[in-house]
Image (cartoon, rainbow, N blue to C red; front, side, top):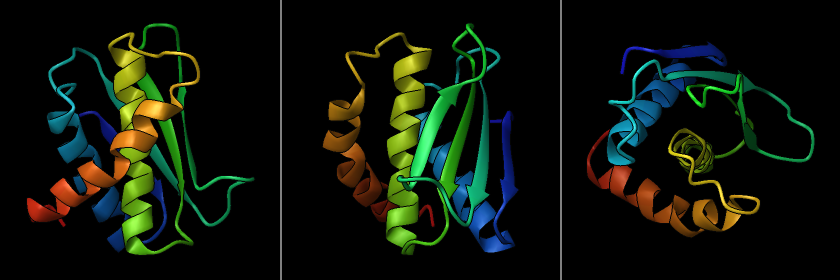
Length: 120
């Protein structure tokens, strides 16, 4: 996917984030959506969470994901996977209620798949 922007963190974290977002985009069938842009910001501290996803505009094609890097590698990746499920929910107009049950339900399964696929 061409429209991924990664900021913050160190080189290793940026590479992990890019590979995770690319894999999730394909696995969640959103990589072919036109004009999809995902910006990931890696921070050392977030308020009361390890990550979040927000729409940038009303087109459901531009998103910002923030992820905290002060967690284990697996949890860092799982947080990105969780937030990418939210991107899919927004982009495909599948957001129900607060969107969390679907993300919580698949984040570990998808993270395990990502590892088995030797993405990292």
